[in-house]
Amino acid sequence: MAAKSGKSMHWLVLPGRSGALALILVCGASLVLSGCQTPVASGMARGSEAYKVIPATDPGTSLVDYTIGPLDTLDITVFQETDLSMKGAKVDAGGQILMPLIGPMKAAGRTPRGLSQDIAARLSEKYLESPQVSVVVTSAVSQRVAVEGSVNEAGVFEIEGHTTLLEVLAMAKGTSRTAALGEVIVFRNIRGERTAALFNVSHIQKGAAPDPEIVGNDLVVVGFSNLKAGWRDLLGTAPLINLFRPY
Image 1: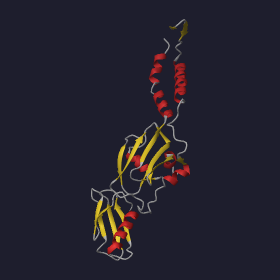
Image 2: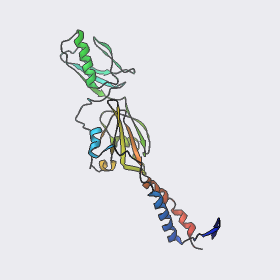
Image 3: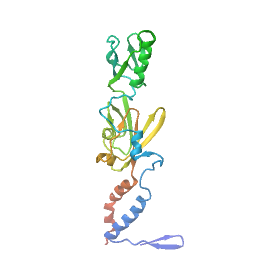
Image 4: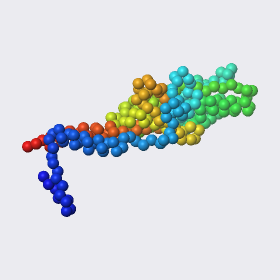
């Protein structure tokens, strides 16, 4: 078979079945290897440094640094003041709680430590001398995380209490066949600054690395592997080999 192009003539030889397979594999490999994975910023925290940004979960700790949100439930204890203490105090839809003597207080957007200090300061203004106040989140239902990238069901999911990266990925129905498991990024706002850390989910699944804790408003992005996608598409062309059978 001949094809004319301009003044020169090029001949296309249709090989046998084995030759066709080799031709497809060579061409496909060159295409796939032209780009292997989603680009990742070189300065992003990774390895042990990633856990300094996004620490591993510790079920034995309380949700001290948790950000309170609407509809959360709190236990507020004023030491030796049972009339001022509250069990199961519900944060309303507007993010407020109603404290004895104090009245409405903004709770949403505060940490339990910050709220306890605010309550103590308000009580010490008029009512108590050096009050000791503790706030514990007993039910955290308002926290949401977003999962994007190479997962089977991207979206926004509600989390409660201590939640790990693997658990959040499970909420997204797991990673897709084209996921770059070594390039899973967690974005988080820390003291008003946007930070990010890179994790290797494959290592975490094998127990070779800790499972980082995911908190409300985190964004998890699973990288895309061009290499996996390319080979998947390449293998999908296998039926085309039959077109190269010799007559």
